[in-house]
Amino acid sequence: MDIHWYPGHMAKTKRLIKEDLKLVDVVIEVLDARIPASSRNPEINEIGGQKPRLVVLNKSDLAAPEKTRRWLEIFRVAGFSAAAVDALEGRGMREIPALVQELAASRMAALASSGRRGRAPRCMVLGIPNVGKSLFINKLVGRSSARTGDKPGVTRGRQWIRVAGSIDLMDTPGILWPKLEDKEAAFHLAATGAIKEEVYDFYAVAGKLAHWLAENYPGALRERYKLDTLPVDQDELLEAIGAKRGYYVSGGMVDTLNSARIVLKEFREGKLGRYTLDEPGQ
Ligand SMILES: Nc1nc2c(ncn2[C@@H]2O[C@H](COP(=O)(O)OP(=O)(O)O)[C@@H](O)[C@H]2O)c(=O)[nH]1
Ligand SMILES: [Mg+2]
Image (cartoon, rainbow, N blue to C red; front, side, top):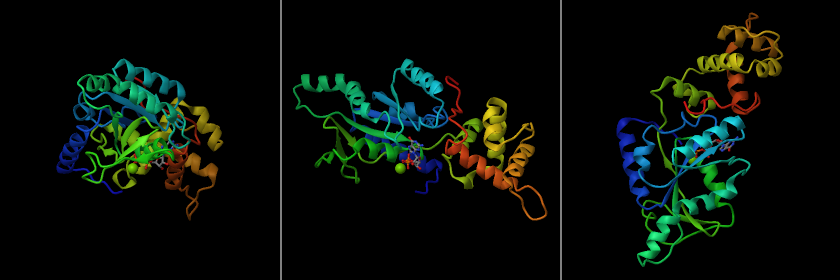
């Protein structure tokens, strides 16, 4: 899906999501575990309002486990429920329905005591593009669920899906816009592949990422690209990587554009290791 964010579009999206939120008991905010701060929509607290919230750190298979643990703690201290998952392999997904039920418990009890008929807690997924909302929904829904009937929310093509016999999930996630004004956040979004290549300079992003790895995890670059020394200069670093890999353009020059592409690709695939770019708490 092509999404271009501009002020009018953001305002409309916000309004529609707020409408949908009136129908749910619990908000599931999906973030990328590698960049829990950068992948967060800047207005999520205003949009999500007072609804109980489950923060899901997805793609935890690609993030540094110790930093994921610290991020989970930070979100819990901030008053949210929090879980780390890997929607690709399904890790951590089984606990999600119970966490939603727990978050909705007091609301459900209040409904029951007001004499209304009992129902399953309703939830919806929110997040910026590419954090894995669709995969998360698919994994959560799995095979064992059924679409439930005619309820509010169906009007704009939304449906409720009964999950694990215990919660109702809105089948369509709310798509929020990413935090691009903050330079560091934009770099992290680009490095992890959350934003499209047309909107950033991939050569600069790859250079900065390689430099960051060289500074913080020199062993990973040395090992992966068989380098004895790691040049401090970004261009020289990409040149050294290209030379080792045998990437040349005619005339014998190193094809550093290809090195840049490969570094980004391999980083995103986890071939350089598991990294969390956002330091816990920052
Ligand atoms: N490694 C890994 N990749 C994931 C995970 N979740 C989603 N992805 C990948 O991330 C990309 C975006 O996922 P998608 O569900 O389309 O994101 P959405 O835009 O938020 O709906 C896809 O290529 C997925 O395969 C995960 O937990 N681990
Ligand atoms: Mg999607």
